[in-house]
Length: 72
Image 1 (cartoon, rainbow, N blue to C red):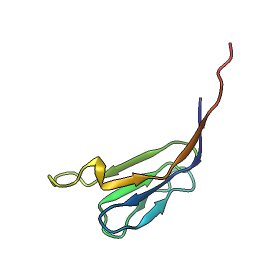
Image 2: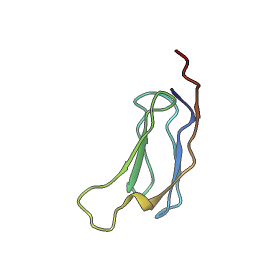
Image 3: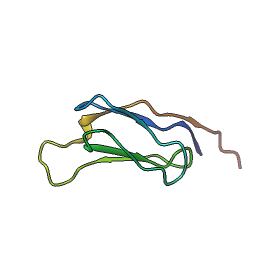
């Protein structure tokens, strides 16, 4: 199981650092090229669709997660 500690990214276009701190806390960078969501419950990030120059390489992921050992 994965436990999210920090859910944060930096946009390479505008250099804005955005962080989602709680569930359903969708945050956009200043130029609206990328977003992040989920807080410490889940990690979801994305970028504008419809523009050919918007790719996953448009952000740097600063998120931090810990994987808990699964026992049966």
